[in-house]
Length: 468
Image (tube, rainbow, N blue to C red; front, top):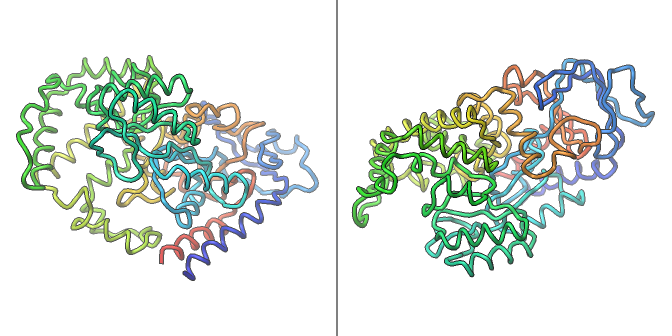
């Protein structure tokens, strides 16, 4: 109880400072233009309240007499980062970890809608220090749901329409669809969401192909959807050899590995190109969550080597991060582990090929899984995008400009520009030269409030205390 109070006091002290945000000027800083990668040196950025007011060469702009002046020599200024695929159920640890890592916006794609809306209201009112929150609320799945956590069921057209109406009325920003939705329910959801002007995002249901989802109008596809299955030359015959009922839990990974090997062996580049073209034509965004794919692939290595960030994770939660108890790890077989590594390499190639075809990407970590850390893991997601073949600029855009475009906020966010919201990250090195430099955070400006490196450490200390 004491540690939770310590964390709460840290947040409240910083929130109190936020309520009286003075004007701020960052002088002699290099501003990174995330639209083209240009570095604009020796600039002064003037912030009033939560808005960037002026940007000009240092010495040529008037700084308000009451402004706090920050010397930005040798520093690089970028927009705040977005994690567009998270699930969180508490904020005492999660919010400080987001902010300390420069993550100033998140999209929660499955959770308790009313609780998430309460947290958002507390952030918006200044009662709680945290990122902007966009939320879908509960996941929408079929009558025998595969989804965990808050779920609503839609088994037919009528139920699909009713689900959209209810979630829209309750304040959801998007509709998250899942694996076992029947076709008729899915298309009813898409049609009603279009009428209600609320985006549909999430998985591609098993009953559809990725191309069908794109053509229907699904706005974003998470985890690469079922692109590899859809691009198999076997088509529906890919699943013919799965066999009868499963009697032994280890049979699941064996069958997945066998099917996966068939899928990789029958990958059709012509079919894949057709799917990519549908994504480009329909402006279907991809949130590949390479981070969670990486953790699932190298789970044993991560478990054996340890991680200093585990201090932010309560012991009760850490126990589920072990091979013996983790849902995704405990029944793995040797052939599945080998297949998983092949699959990850193919998924990296898939991201590269899609980007070359003009498909647009956003960063997402799938926070809630083992070895995924709020805020920290977003930086590794950008690294993985670069490993896959994106340029550092494209990876940076996936975390800044692209979420703003997707959310319709590009007129007020996504770049360091006058008139835009002052959610910014001050770095000690240029991320366009090396994407790993996004981790070299000197300060964060959250909704106009300047948080120094020392204050960011205080936030992380509070998160650590809340984990005990």
